[in-house]
Image (tube, rainbow, N blue to C red; front, side, top):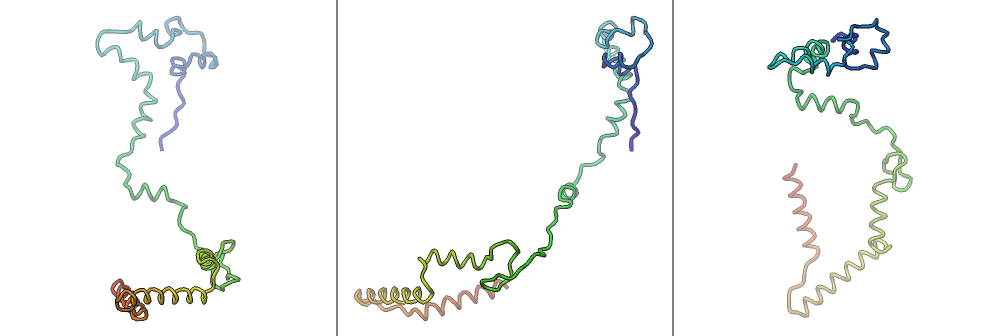
Length: 176
């Protein structure tokens, strides 16, 4: 680690005139009491010689600036590891049994299965499963009746359900 340097009295006196008064320095000659900018204006020489007092005044700061530069760019992985420290996923320990369906659910959270069934119940217009099945069979019979009247072949609903089950099993078999 870099050592901490206390700023010198001349540095503080040059940049912070108020600090000079609080340091209780012995009286200095008139040339040194002039603020820094006025001293630089009087010492200005043509060319590069005008900047010579600046490195002398900033010598302590310059070492700190040079040491504060990283040698290499921080990789994406290291940066993400540093940012995500302490934010890992935690195991769920507070599990309870749902009083309605008996499945496992998180404590103080609604059971997702019960919520889904309630949503389904609302979307069905508060009808029971038997009422929905009878409505579906009536709908299928009316479709077949309309097809008979139009002179078309009736739909075999059981065969259609078997085909959809086979297709679903085939998709699930290929995805495994």
